[in-house]
Length: 91
Image (cartoon, rainbow, N blue to C red; front, side):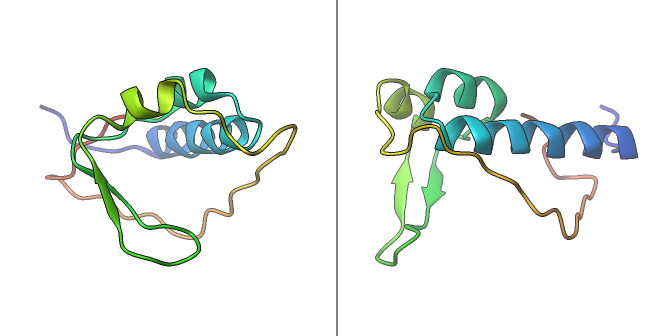
């Protein structure tokens, strides 16, 4: 398996993350789930504090979730990236 991550790969990853964040704040879970992959055992830290929660099938949980957000927009600030050979590369 080729584990080399190119600048183009990174650009595509960031673009998809931006699209996913935008879809999330617009309440469009179908588009969000189309652009982001939650691994089994995904751990989520609540934005307002509290204990982390672990989800075995996050996509299934979100499929019918209704977001409290509507007509929002998101803009990600990409500060730094790290990649190494044993990191799974997926979206």
